[in-house]
Figure (cartoon, rainbow, N blue to C red):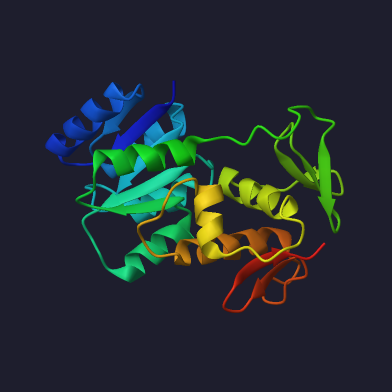
Length: 226
């Protein structure tokens, strides 16, 4: 059973979301301000966090920045704000997804399931490995290593690497990545993929502005150059 932490200052919204998530089989914990939310995010063992932007004590963006210094737990930003710059800033700060109120319970549950999904690998053993450049990918341990040292990737970034490796060097569109890696039909801006790819390059490429492995095919998508 996955545990979901809801960080939201409106009691009625928390109650509504919690009621529906419990019906879907999730365990739910809640916090009503940013300071308490950060503490619980770091210590309650949540599998995913639903994080509002406008919070007393500490806003959602600041909470996320502090959280990402210590944890890669999946985070879905949930807010009534519709400005495009807020969505992109949230994703660049480290959010895995972004939903704008109002939203349907069905869509919320789909996104939670997609973001708490874990890639089990082909064989489920530490002996199943793939490689590109100086990197090795162990699908049993779900790790990417360089020179024997693990690379600090989020689950989403790890799944992107695995998907490119199994795509045999072909160009993959942003729509396909959203469907196969995010795991649902996306209703928002596909630039979420671009943000995730930029963050991945910053961790993998020696020069992210001039990548050697994760390449862009203008107007078509991305591909892995091995």
